[in-house]
Image (cartoon, rainbow, N blue to C red):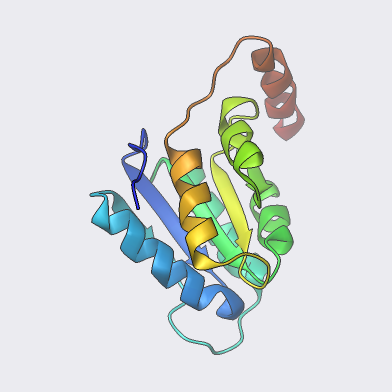
Length: 153
């Protein structure tokens, strides 16, 4: 499998108990590309509430600990909601290549989320590569993202 060159150098990675296997597979994938990966947990299949992990990763990203984040839960929806509650953080649940690209290119989302019960490992790796190899394009999207940022204030 060929991988696109990542524009990001550091990635935060987190999951709830339902996303553990996929998170670990993504961690191996990212580290094999030479990226600095900060694993915010979890490390077991013991039940955990996804808002705790999603918010923790988003806060650390907002504090500048890493450039982008990836969160995994059963559907990806809960983690996106949790991360989006942190001011300054934009998270998008991704399940297809176009959304993976546009999440960053149009929306300047610093976090993507996956549903481990919805997509498989090879698809998640591909979508991660697409997301990490793109950047915010500005242009017509810049005023829209500025409005999103204003909502945080």
